[in-house]
Length: 407
Image (cartoon, rainbow, N blue to C red):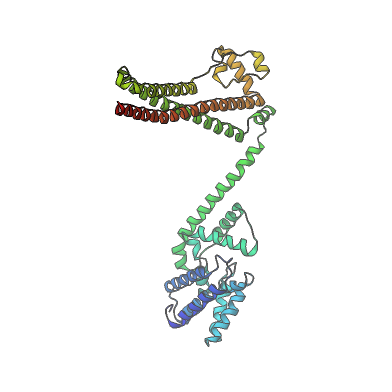
């Protein structure tokens, strides 16, 4: 029956009406829901041996039962009947059958109270999703529709309570729907109860925590803890400075290695040849080349040379907050007990702790500035020395060639 020409026209009319006139906010009572109800009505009716005109009016009621949502949620059943009446009259449908269709549409209103077999079928079909695995998804769509159309906002707990209550009271009327859908409906009910229990437990947890009274000492300790954002700032900044220091040391090591290789090659290859009269033209370029290499190595070594302070501090220094206990150079010669006492004083004084971290960061920056300044000088000397040495060797070689040609 669903595939005859009459119902094809009905389906096309309903589809176009929903597509062109249904508000975007209606996310549940739309064409998809109507199509699912029609299929459920047909499935249940076949199982319950409903045929002929009874099946026809059932299917028409299913197609039109929610179409009134195109004009608003209030009294949508009455609006659905008006739209259905106008369409069915245009198709010369009999008044008696139209009246039956309207009776079936009225039966879908909540709470459901069907009075005959046909009303039981359409009631079960309208709530067929209660026994589907997609129940949670469709329930969320219905909640969203309430919020958009009715400004009815409920909490997760309130929504779960409403669903749990509805599922607990609901019962399918027809034998077919009861047999097929009840098992999954009960699973959905248990899932809602479980989710509700979790939500209530999650809500009670902070309440219980807030009821626990904290002592004055615990509150004070919490207030005295450094803020997490400040700790993160110091941690990230100090780590970045340490990485920069590692990079500087690596660059200095590269320059030292290259200079040492060049120096060893020059000493082994060039120096033995300088005592010959024919190679005197190489003396000045070679000496300049060696001087530039040695100066480069000196500046590279200076950039990596460590500097350690006395390694001692007094209790007066700690009391006056003059010493940075976070730098090893200030305590490496101190007895363990004195160091522990100083660190305890540091940890119990937030301002002292922050100032120590600031000092550590500041002086680390000073050291980095010196490192990179010396490295820049070393790389500049190395670069200029290489270039000048190459030109010096070329010039010396050209002068040697010219002098040989004259003689």
